[in-house]
Length: 127
Image (tube, rainbow, N blue to C red; front, side, top):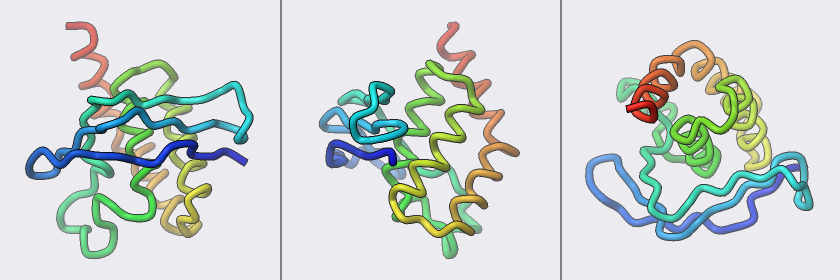
């Protein structure tokens, strides 16, 4: 099974923004996998982009926080296709013990509504 190999060390910036104080790694597929994602120190995250009206049920941070940071990085970096980034997000939530209902709900939400963020990140990278 996949694994997170580092603690998530953050610095609060303002509002909903946080900055990674140290690099953070997630191994895709297993703890010894050669396929890994390293979110670099200095990367800014907002955790899960959940509409405020739903925060009582799903706040931006929660058990899925580490998975949300990896997902934010994958969208920002664009090193994998969007569909792969979304699948990794779902897999990482399972590793963190997020309930099946929540992880599938969040996965469906990023599949349905994540395109806007993906396109925005790709446009910023091309600029």
